[in-house]
View 1 (cartoon, rainbow, N blue to C red):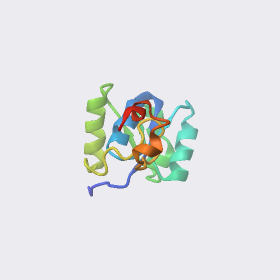
View 2 (view 1 turned 120 degrees about the horizontal axis):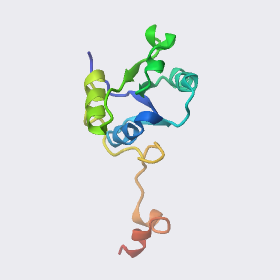
View 3 (view 1 turned 90 degrees about the vertical axis):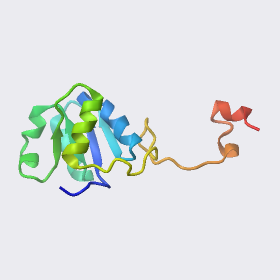
View 4 (view 1 turned 45 degrees about the vertical axis):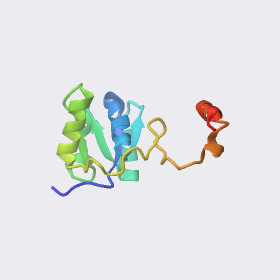
Length: 128
């Protein structure tokens, strides 16, 4: 399998920690809070995202079985083992673009000067 570099993910609520781990690696990773399988598959289809889930029902859906959508059925509760499974299954490039995406909101981080953030970052007020 070829290496995946620009993969985009949608992470089901049952493996939510994966979203932050993938964001640390620089991968766009939406966190899906809903419980509706059709909701997660609709977003994945419209935004061309890979579904990461522990929900066996999702991976049995026609869109995934037919190959129109890619999904990884995560088998462990342990986030480190989950990451290893995703990296191995999708042949992810580990150092793609680390720490380039906000761990909380999934937006691309932008470089700012100390002056630009000194009023919004408490510690920046004490910088000289």
